Amino acid sequence: MSAPRNTGPVYEVFTQTGPSAPVTYAGSIVCHQHQQAWHLAKDAFGRRDDLAQLWVVPRDSVVTSAAPYDPAVLAAKTRMPHRQPAFPIARRKRREQATTAAEVPVDGVPATLWRCLADDLFLHAHRLAERIVDYIELEASLAVGSIAQEDLAHARTAVVLCGLDPATVDGHFFDRDQEDWFPSRLLSQADESWLATIACGLILSAAVATAAGATLGRESTIEVEQLVHFGHWATMAVAVLADEGLAREFAGVFAVLHAAAADLFHAPSGVVGAGSGDAIPEKLLAARFAELLGTAVPAHWLTDRGAAPRGAGALATTLDRLRSVRSTYRPGVFT
Amino acid sequence: MPIAEQPTRYYELHDDMPDEVRAGAARFASVQALNEMVGVLPFAAWLDRAPSYARKQMLIAKIQDEVGHGHVAARVAEDLGVSRESILVDFVEGRAKAHNIFHYDFESWEEFGPGLLLMNSAAIVQFNSLMKGVYLPYARALRKIEREESFHYQHALDMTHEVLTHGDAAQRHRAQEGFDRWLPRVLAYFGPPDTETITSNPMWRCGLKPDGNDALRQKWLGRIIPVVRKLGVRVTTEQANEEPDGTWSFTMPDWVAVKRVIHNGGPASQRRLDWVRGALVRNAALRHALREAS
Image (cartoon, rainbow over all chains, first blue to last red):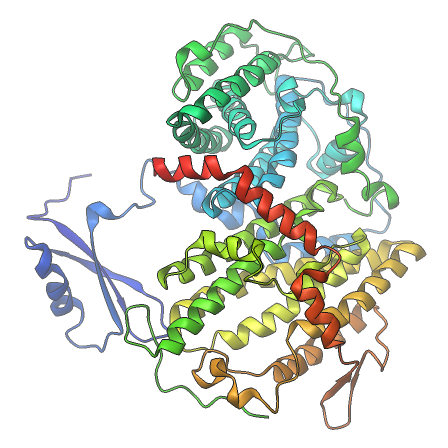
């Protein structure tokens, strides 16, 4: 594709034709004098119409959805069907058409790395959602809400990739015995502070993005979105590290969580891929993970923790609470 | 019933506008922002107990939406000179009040659906009215907010239907009790009767409040009572009844009690204040660091 051949600075022009009409994109002009751009835009796009508003913005000042942004991230309706008003209606119709309550089989998905990362993603989303209303800035709350929903979506994708029937995902996360969960110790730490949230978010998103990049093919949705999450947490980490007091505290919090995350790339079944039998050395994943994490925190923080095995999760309190409403209804009501 | 005349002038941020429009718009936007940020808290309390993957996703989406509504309204208020931090500080220091309905928690999952259905449908009726107001940035913000409220409405319908269809007798009873408990609270949400006084309300006179409280309450009853009856909720004639002339009679809220609740005398008032105060204090250093870095 040939490059634009503009002869001067470009300004994007937006017009509004009436007080209740939306402001819409009208086109662009080239103008060498900044203070004349608005008048030129009026001559170009407002000659024949009454306009309520005319906005002129230097093209360089506009952040667009072009590369490097993945167009898929703008497909909110497709990616997140649960956000649509019709979603609960469709669910209700499906349930009404079912003649018997669905019996949810106990799934026998082996504890591959991705099944374990699905546990991590689900638990991370579960904890992170509560931070939405732990107000720092409203923009941070909005970002955290998106990260939590995307982590939940990735958890679902991960177990489906491992061979789980999509119709049984609900039961997989809500009805499994504690002994069948293999979350990283990263997700069982008690610290619910924002510094711990930032550190946990950095570590988990780096790990999942690394695993996705190595095992799911080039630029999978999981990798792309987890890298966006990583970028968000890294931005917060930069702000924290610029504050002397917070940086000291963050260093201590990060060290604890980084040590706990030594089991992140361990798969109890010994299978590191998405259940397909492909094997990728844990050490290779750990090295790539450290390289990514090192772009956000000081290199000397990333001490070699060695690898540790995952164990069955100490999730009694979390799972009891998670099921406290569900368990009072007969099986199949909520699936 | 008095209806505001169609305004002859609408205002954007940089227009010359009467002081009462500017001040009134700032007040409406900041009150909206506060009530979104505080009003989300009774729902957020159920995040860790949402009983299915889909319900969890929908609830997280709703929580995010409400905070997003606060964000949109706070932006309108900021452009009019109200700092977003002052919105929450004024709340914890008693200068700003949350709507009566946000001073209560849900006592059970079964109460959640009917309570949300009543609150959400009332908000939609109110926002549809305020969208006709003369300050256009606030009107546009409400259009975005109202669009997302339709999702919450469907969610609430679905939750209520689920309990009333699949719950056992005790669960269905709790849903009915939830409706009985929340109906008077939401009737009070629209504000005291004002048919006789609306024309002297400065917000009505300057075009920011197109409809009076009584008119909105009637519109809401006309919409929501048939919906809840169709779901299987029992509504007594004492609670709400459509009269032969098409108006709705209802048990008038105790406005003295409502005022007491609004002034932080509700069962969850202290929890709201403690949570917001805690977030302001607990997160002050991080908030400062993020602002310094931006």
